[in-house]
Length: 137
Image (cartoon, rainbow, N blue to C red; front, top):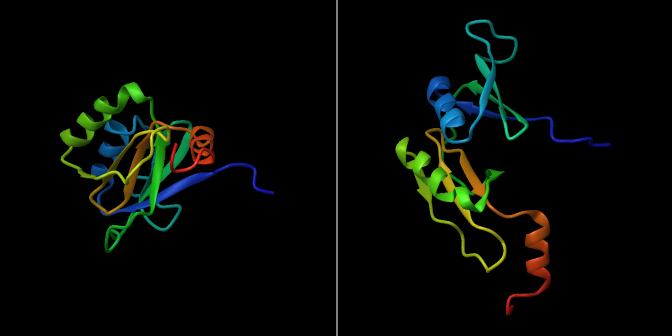
């Protein structure tokens, strides 16, 4: 039986640059850096982001951008704060998909390795409640 999400691992061409994104945009806290000692496939760092373990490992960037993404919950009052952080690092913001009222607001952005991140203000419960009301609501 699955107990919980263990961790997320992202491959990055530049550990320092990705560390900056995790720390300055996602409020991540570094808890481990391998340096030149590799216990896994390559040099790596571990962070805590919103209570979750996020690992980054040195490697080749994704070949292209897709809608596959990782979403983190933020407060609706913090959208502008996070947008400013993303823009300060020169990251590419992606237009949000069309939304219906009541399912929350999202900021999407790509890192330099083509990973897509979402910062979302809604919850699963809010979205399901909104979808139950149908498109006309």
